[in-house]
Amino acid sequence: MNGIGQRSRLGIVSVLILAAALWTYFEWVRPPVNQLAERSIREQDPSYQEMIHLQAWGDQLVVYYRTNDKVTAVLLHKKMLGYEIAQYLLKHELNEMQSKAISWNGNGGDGKENPNLLHGIVYDPAVTQVILISERSKGATIIRNGSTTIWFSFLDDQPQLPITIRATDKNGKTLYETGVMEHWGEQKRL
Image 1 (cartoon, rainbow, N blue to C red):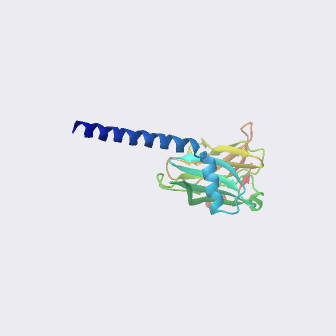
Image 2: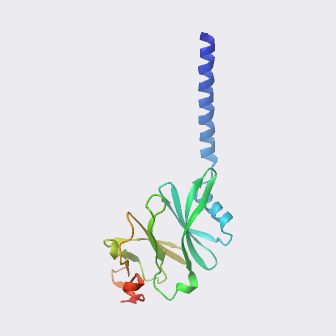
């Protein structure tokens, strides 16, 4: 019986070594996350042109990308061999919104499956900072990619009302304030 027990242990060790080797191999040859995300979006949105920004949110991804006439943001869920679009978070027509300095959109999620997120596009190149006044003056992240500039901020809770967003220049001078239309009306150039 001693020989059978040793063979059994040797078999288990061999299987574990083989599993570890296979896992290491597949981790090594697997494409980078941005390539997997891009491939998944291309398969599900044929109008995809280029990725603007990819942001991890827990074990999911928020991806901003361009089409011919839109900037789109999607929430991607991980699958076995890539990602799938779980939700569209933003679709802004590029030509429609260029009369404004910035656009904005809010996504109030549960914070677990879907993010609480304020985000949009910066159209005025003089804008270098977006401040969320209604979120205790929290600064947003601004990403410039070629001719497209986006801004976003993940929130811990639902957005505070009335949503108030301030856009400033490099010297901190307020250029625009905007937010909930019932409170603000049209975007104000200051």
